[in-house]
Amino acid sequence: MHDHAHDHSSNSNRRRLSLVLILAVSYSVVEILGGLWTSSLALLADAFHLLSDVAALALSLFAVWMAQRPATARRTYGHSRAEILAALANGVGLAVMAVMVSISALGRFGEPAEVNGLGVVFFATGALVYEGISLWLLRAGAEHNLNMRGAWLHVMSDALGSLGAIAAGLAIWAYGWLWADPAASLLISALILHAAWRLVREALDVLMETAPAHLDVDEIHTQLLELAGVQSVHDLHVWTIGSGEISLSSHVVAPREGQPDKVLRSVREMLRDRFDIVHTTIQVEENGAISTESSLDCEGACDET
Image (cartoon, rainbow, N blue to C red; front, top):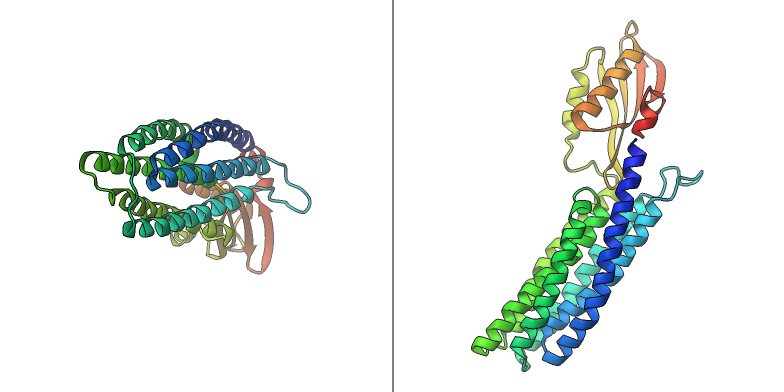
């Protein structure tokens, strides 16, 4: 059941990404032409950022396809990490784009260029409509999937860029403030850098097999010790294979007169019910004698994994 749900989610994500990619390609051409016509750096920055989104969305789409490929004898965990690598690449790409826009904006402060304010507002408003539709399409997948969150952040940063371009265009049209264009670009770049750092950090946490942020490993350890028949716990590891795929392995020591199968069952049930962890490998040790069993061998586990 778990695999079926994961496949359904992947297919939904693929459809969402495909629709957003088509929208991005269509409007990127329009916005680049608009940026050239209005001479707006904020609008051009938003347009080129949109072009980077085309590459980022294509990468995310490819990663979803890779993640759906079955496990092999060499890649026993499958290809789930492809989505994490795509998220990392998207985060780095966002940061590079923000730095480039910032450098251009700083240069504009010394030599402000004439900008067609109303033209900027017109094209940026059109971009904001596209981005609103795209954010709505990607929102559901971004909640539990790091790759989709990277794509969502790319579009969100574009939406911020469009809002900044609209504000700059209105300021130029109403007051002649040419400095508003590079100022808006710098503000948008700072917001993009913050989002990029969070995305890169989360991707690196997965690649470094850091415990998921929403789980307290010390609490898991404490809850295991409180189970009947559990004397001690060691070699407790919690990590993420791919987006939303949490795994846990541990050694549990039980008394010789205990029932290893019963202890194993109670450990599995507690981890599933309290922490929503179903991919578990538990080794029960009895005073030197070791009984090893994986949750994959337990009843009903084929449906869970």
